[in-house]
Length: 316
Image (cartoon, rainbow, N blue to C red):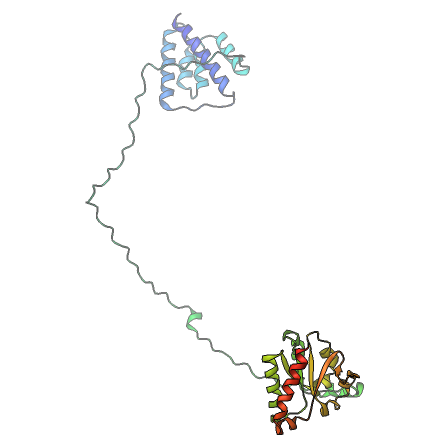
């Protein structure tokens, strides 16, 4: 096989490889060494072929891609037409490509030089950075001092016309110039938080001696028998709260003065006296005391009073 046939086979193999790996619209880029190698081989083949068209040399000199080099290697019009048909429709099942072996191998490029590390023990410490204090000039707002302005007292509103209107149109509704005190309403609203006492002592007087006597009885009952509490009877009478008070499930006994009980008409609605001589307020037993001044004048009555209370509460 002569040189022309070798180059034909080489060109055919390379064409088949390129058509198999790349489409016809893709340009292949390569490095300068590979380009110079194929250009040199093409020049050698062109010099050995007789009657080679002069345009091959000029085509090889202006070739910029592998496709232009392959076109220049076609030495006859028949090969050029065959090459053009091959570019349009590639041959089915091309033979596996074989990479050509260059006559002169490309020497490997030396690795990039790396800086030599410094010897241990000879490194100089890096001085710490110096922090400079930058004094920023104050802005106009920072230089200006703000003064607090005290609010002026609001003037009183005159409701004379409004009061006159309500007095004329609604004479039955009482009017007040001040805000009503709601402490009593708050106490009633928070009454459920306090545990209900089992024994209630009704107070009818603001005298210090009588209040102290009832407080001693309540303290003794609370410590020995059951929880006890003193309530002001006239206040409950005014609020008409006897029904709610007597309906408490925990209430076991009510202690009241016999003479003062009849001054409470709302409470007397719940008063009952049984045939056995026992007294009740609704369903709650009632323990009637003598005049409180007698207990303070005759201390011996206190002993019999305590025994009676223990009997009443002990039997429940």
